[in-house]
Amino acid sequence: MSVSTGASWAQNTGLPALGDGDSISLSAERQLGDRIARELFRDPDYLEDAVLDEYVQQLWTPLVRAAVARGELSAELQERFAWRILLGRDRSVNAFALPGGYLGVHLGLMAVVSTADELASVLAHELSHVTQRHIARGMSDQSKMTPWVVGSMILGALAASKSPQAAQALIVGGQAAAIQNQLSYTRDMEREADRVGYGILVDAGYDPGGFVSMFAKLQQAAGLNDSGAFPYLRSHPLTTERMADMQSRQQLNLTVPKPLPDMAHAMMAARARVLSQSSPDALKAWIQGPASLAASASAADQAAALYAASLSHLLLRDAAATQRHVQALGVLIQSQRHLPSYAAAQRWWRLLQAEVAERQDKPAQAVRVLTPEAGQQTWQRPELMALAQVLQRLPEHALVPTVMAQLRQVVQQTPWDAQAWDRLSAMLSVQGQALASLRAAGEAQAARLDWPGAVDRFRAAQELALKGRLQPGEHIEASIVDVRLRHARERLRGLQAPER
Ligand SMILES: [Zn+2]
Image (cartoon, rainbow, N blue to C red; front, side, top):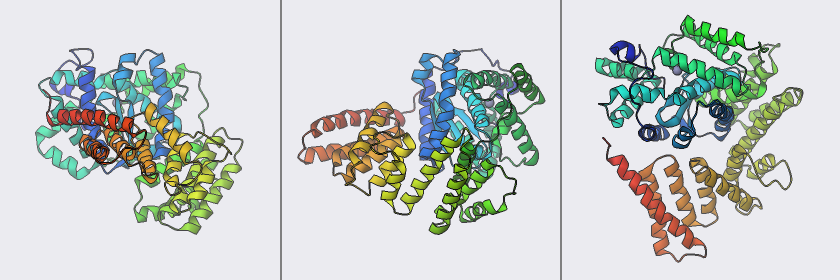
């Protein structure tokens, strides 16, 4: 977790660090993580964006797989921890591991990295803080603090890293600053996360140069801007020693030619930029992008500028200009069929087209864009989320049953997919299935760990079942609701009673 502004607690207090003392248990750490994540889910900056979610997930999954294969990630840890990535709309350059296997990634970080490998290198480093249980090791020496207190401290520190004013307020009481220092990793932990993360990155098939260029980028950024806009940097001191470590590791591997920033990544970075800075003034600036490009700009830079301009015009509701830029982006991508990232770029472009059609009230057109193959029965997650969104306005469409069936499959496999539950709930409601819709709404709240919200929805579903005459098949749904309501109430009680 990158929540510190100063030297690490171990140095301040002379307490032992690596490998000493008992760690807190996996379940205690998970509970603590749940408590923190629950607050983050409610943060207005928390973003559920199916496109960016998938992009990060695509980078993250091979890293987790490599960590398992290398024996860094035990089956138990994999089973007990959440392994969920939360995106924050925040424009500061930051990523942090939280207790219990939650990871926070700011859009500001996605916006500044120039290759997928660079982003993967940050994720690998943070993943290693989790697999090496650095958080638990740090907390074992603070046994006097209940997880409740530690949770509030971490939330306070995260808030502080977002707002300079809040940081000031927090630091006014010297005690708060001292607490913040206690939450940081030791230098040894940082070095270990670099070493383990590097191995995971290479095994996962990424260009190890990503680690080195990310370091260089952060260091350069620090030189340019020391205003605190780079909290990741502050908590990850870039000593020359760490740089040298990285470079020597890099030389052990055969030098891979540095990949050019690819078009698909550039489009995702552009999306992150626009969504993290979307005031009208910022949008107007993104619109200027394509015109201010140098004639020699790479295809990736052009794609980024056109993507950002398309999305900005869309958010500013200029339909004609949106259309022009989306078309220009399509032409550009078609001219780059030889690039390895062509297919991915093509796909992000199609999703952008669907987003445009949906926002411009053309649901049928969005469906056509999202279903390029006749008779298609399954979709990847971003396409499925987009389809479910537009089909709410086309309740008679032939694809409705197919899409609902796939949504049901998704929530069965990944019950923590809150967005999928939301979409399913909305579609069920349009189809007149009120009981199932209320239950799905409750599941969406449960997936965001919002237990009061879940209890509220499940109770509404239960009341409906008691009052109304149940249709065939709804008896099963009603009994599931009873079980889920009991579970949600138990979790709510657990929330209200801080454990010792
Ligand atoms: Zn670190």
